[in-house]
Amino acid sequence: MFGKKTKEAPTDWVQEQSPVQAVCQIATGTIIDGSVKVTEANMRLDGQINGNVFCAGRLILSPQAQIHGNIDCLELVCEGKIIGNILARNGCALFRSAQVQGDIETKFLQVENGALLNGKVNMMSRE
Image: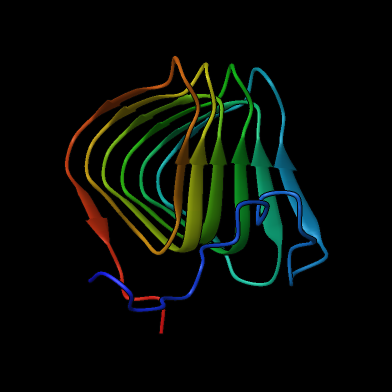
C-alpha cells in the first residue's frame, strides 16, 4: 500500500508500434454478418460487424465503426460503437466518440473524457 513500489502503467502504449505489422481493413459501408477471426494481422474497422471478433493484434475502430458481438484482441483502440464484452489482453483505449455497452477485461485502460462505458471493468494482472 503506502511506500510499496509498484510497476507504473505505460501511459503511451497506444502510440507504440504494434508487435503485428500487417493490417486487415474493413471499409466504410461494409457489413459482415458472422464472426471474424484475424490470426496474423492488426485490424482496422470502418464498417460494421454483427458477430464476434478475434484479432491476434491491435483492433482499431474508427468513429463510424460498429461491432455487435464480443471482442477478443491483443489491444483495442476504439472511437466507434461496441455492444458486447471485450477482452483486450494488453490494453484498451476508449476515445471521446467511443460507445461501449458491455464488460471490459484488460491490463491497461485509458478512457478519454466524453467516452461512454456501460459495463463492468476487470483489470487483469500486469505480470
